[in-house]
Amino acid sequence: MPSLRLLVLFFFLFFPVHSQEDTPIARFLRYLQFNTAHPNPSYADPISFLISQANAIGLHARTLEFTPSKPLLLLTWPGSNPFLPSVLFNSHLDSVPAEPSKWIYPPFSATLAPDGKIYARGAQDDKCIAMQYLEAIRNLKANGFTPSRTVHISYVPDEEIGGFDGSAKFAESKEFEDLNVGFVLDEGQASTGEEFRVFYADRSPWGLIIKATGDPGHGSRLYDNGAMENLMKSVEVITKFRESQFDIVKSGEAMNSEVISVNPVYLKAGIPSPTGFVMNMQPSEAEAGFDLRLPPTADPDLIKKRIAEEWAPARRNMTYELIEKGPIRDYLDRPLMTLTNDSNPWWPVFKQAIEAAGGKLSRPEILASTTDARFMRQRGIPTLGFSPMTNTPILLHDHNEFLKDTVYLRGIEVYESVISSLSSFKGESY
Ligand SMILES: [Zn+2]
Image (cartoon, rainbow, N blue to C red; front, top):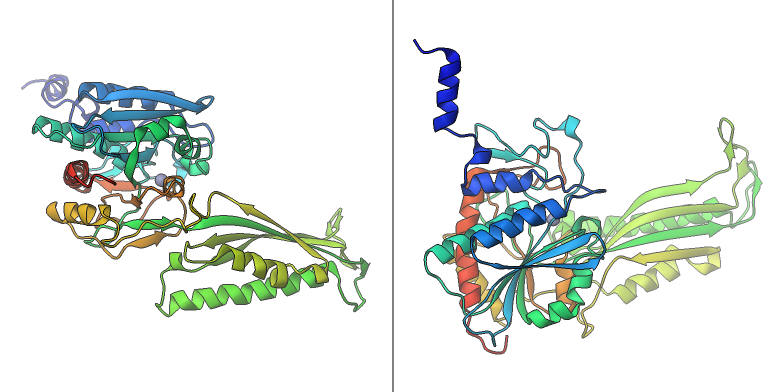
């Protein structure tokens, strides 16, 4: 009988562990193992890995740096007709942090569980698409496909912290202008059903800080225009508005992402004492912070008017600060949305590519949060959010984020169809 040690040696000789294989899943696991979590994401190492992948399949690679230590990788597959606008596939390098103690496997170990689930921070958001783009091009090249339009892939830093040092600067750059991009595909979200989700807009995030001032007074007194009283009145008005928007969602008239959301995120008031707060004194200042999200269908000027007249009126000694995080309108002052009907010539090409891969799209949606797609839409470039994940729980930014190996592999086939269709689209003026 051979010894156990010999058996183990035999096993590893003939069945190498995944990280040593060179398969699509092994390459995905390798990319997932880079710790790209904020606040200190590793950018240099994943970029080196992606460049080696690009070299292996004959793509041009170029690193751009619009902010020191925040590199951006641009890969290019030249098309046969350089006069046609190009197509750009975007993904971000960074990830949100993870709390290892809440995970069943370490978040950057990229563990392939026996049931085929690949556990890793970034498995859904959005390292899957980063590697699927490359795998799809690898297969298309192996099959002898040549694109008419040039295909670019961008790997950008800092999306999870707003993208201001990444995509925002990239979209404004001379280098971007020179790419002559006609259409962009960026990240989307998982779908729990059979249909693929697609996003044509993001909501715009605003931070709203409301401050109230008033005369201080004894805690026992009833008087008008105290700071706390004024702030509480505002909170009441804002709460009513929040309910009216939420009612629209609850009745099924609109999706969560199609209404204006406003949620209180902090309250700051009171006079500190050694044991907590002074209890018999009404303070002269009070403040509240709100997270406000606007769908592109909302009129930002109307909301600003509402804030000035109803939520923080000067006649009640109130002031406010509005922090607009990113663009609201494109360069022609249009709402930041990509049309999903035949008036957008790219839409039917994309839709048919999904169908050709045996898939179906659900009703196009507005994304409840934001992505880098807004910076591309700001330039007036049609941009859709899409990550090919069906029958998958939505686990982005959650504990135990995972993606099934079979779902990942099917996504590669979907991108083969999407990349070949979009890069073959002959419309000259788009
Ligand atoms: Zn993302």
